[in-house]
Length: 59
Image (cartoon, rainbow, N blue to C red; front, side, top):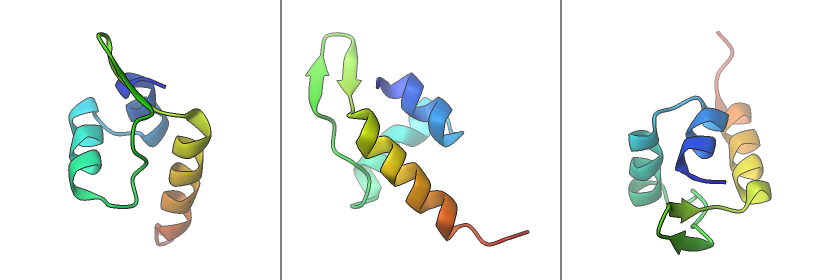
C-alpha cells in the first residue's frame, strides 16, 4: 500500500499518515521506499487499523 491507500484505509489524510509514522511507535514501518513514495505491507496496515478501531470509545 502507498501513502494514499493507507490514508484511505485509516480515514485520515496523507499528511496524517506521515505524522503517525513519525510519532506513533506502534505504526508499521514501510517495507520499501520507491521513487513513487513509501510502501507498506497491507497486512501490517490492516492489523494496525483493526487495533486502532478497537481502541476507539463507543460514541
